[in-house]
Length: 354
Ligand code: KG4
Ligand code: ZN
Image (cartoon, rainbow, N blue to C red; front, side, top):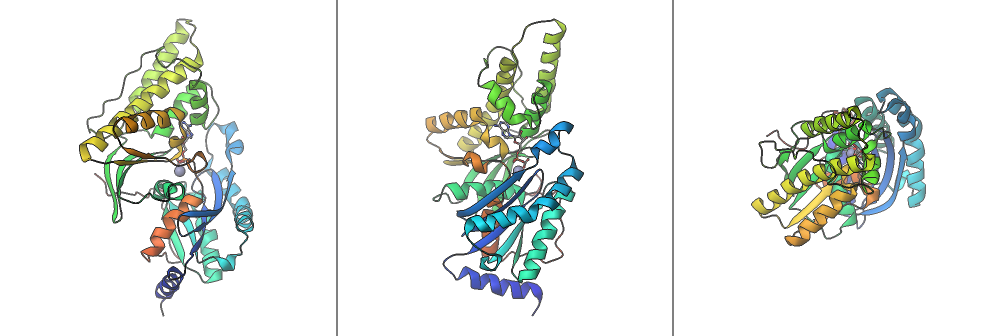
């Protein structure tokens, strides 16, 4: 029997059992992560090793350092995830791994590791889209969440407004330039905050006055599209002008103004999409879903319009492997397995282009 047919038979057999356990591995950027997930809904263990301290001196992720550190840590975090779940590799029904998007070298380390495990154990391999993983993080925290729903995906590399259905994703809108997380990171850098700046800017903004300075709300032409590069330039100009004039401006006020404008832009367009398309469930996904102001604003807007809002807990907003395990389970159910020559896809998309 051909390899994939044999693996599909194994997957079908596993799906007949009450509990299907997937070992998932994630290494697309600067986190090395492994998790054991049951039936795509229950986290049995989740280990994340962050490389952030290694990249801080460079002000951003250095791809070569990231790849080398993943190689060092993949086996360690996997061992910890299995131990925490009280299980062995033999107890796993399938191995899942992120295949893209991300840094090619970083992706290849996880992919090669997962292929080795799948081959050695003779178990099905699932190659997962990282963005789909972020969406599926919500399934781990909200047991009664089922498609269809609208999802705002905001991370360091992506900003999408997508309709999520059993049969797939439809893109309603996306950023025309920078991603939301990228915009936060760039603004944070202007304020002298360390990489990755988003969480630092968010924390600082809590102490500032969001109405102390005027920044323009972006207006890209597509009703559900986003744009952050003009806002970024306006922010840089504002900071420089204040400096040149020797004006006293509190960094916390500047952070609060920038955050308020990004959050208004994201939430206004997301609300419009909900109302125009009749969505009554909205999910938030990606690293920026940890942003306190965004969570507060969407909570208020959704309450006012009787929209159910689901958000990942903070532990599942950033990159982790549990979300990859959740997405992988849906793939397993479709018997959408990977062959052992599957390659990394740094530019992988979740949607057909608009
Ligand atoms: O999803 P993620 O962990 O990685 C990607 O797939 O890109 O997102 C990381 C991004 C970074 O740009 C980071 O600064 C941003 O999410 N981020 C935040 C916050 N926490 C993480 N941005 C704003 N406020 C936060 N609290
Ligand atoms: Zn991510």
